Length: 348
Image 1 (cartoon, one colour):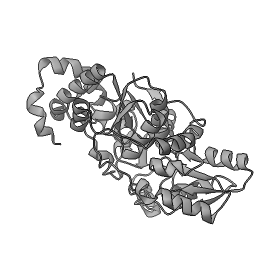
Image 2: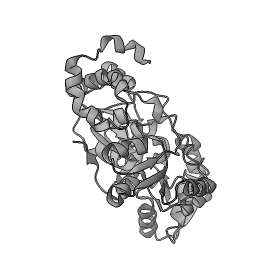
Image 3: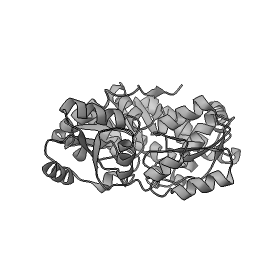
């Protein structure tokens, strides 16, 4: 769905300009003023329609600023959004993220309508493993608990003992190992996240071979080059990056942890080895930090646009459904994960 089908009906009127002025001030350093008349009418209509529908929009940290700051009701990493999906009273959830996130919302809120603006918004990690693969792993390594990264389908979660995100992976691994009285766990599907967790715990990790197409492309040589080109810059990495990349960085953590690092430390210059929109979204709030721009785009996240969000609300598409039998088992794994970490952050 292209913007051209919507824009003739949504003019940038003085009323729209006035209604969205405060929103533009928030993102004015990352969205050029010349682009705002294109975004503002769609933003205004989304914000009107979601109230009319009783809907909330959950936006991942990799969404673009006009979505993240201007239409989202809750923002965060996968763990934060999973928590909000579980507790929201809204009748309709619009997932501004990828398909596995929408499935997780539906698993946790089976009586709510969950919409994803583009069915093709997938994930290389989720595509790397199936429920059948997990069953084979459990046959090969009987009696070992399966810790599954949330970047997976509901079917895979249903075959798991507990889910995790990059922000609580170490705690989840150590908790399930202690509960089962074992010194080894199966951790799927991200190979590099598993390696980075293994470097932080005494628990042995049996990993899968999945990789994030955004983070696997960073190299240790990239980090050394960034440091040479920008002396004194702080380098932050997501734990989906290769272990040698993480070893070269000043700090590694989930998207939420990276945001927290920048908020609290206020380093003058930062390189963030993650998805490109992260830096834009943080810099809209924190203008005294210079964000250097080596990053990789997630093609799946970028399938979600304002026009598609509006279309989803207008037509109530695309509804995400999960087989109830799978959902019940997946929910148990996700709810066990939700016992670890902090609550979601509301946008005011």
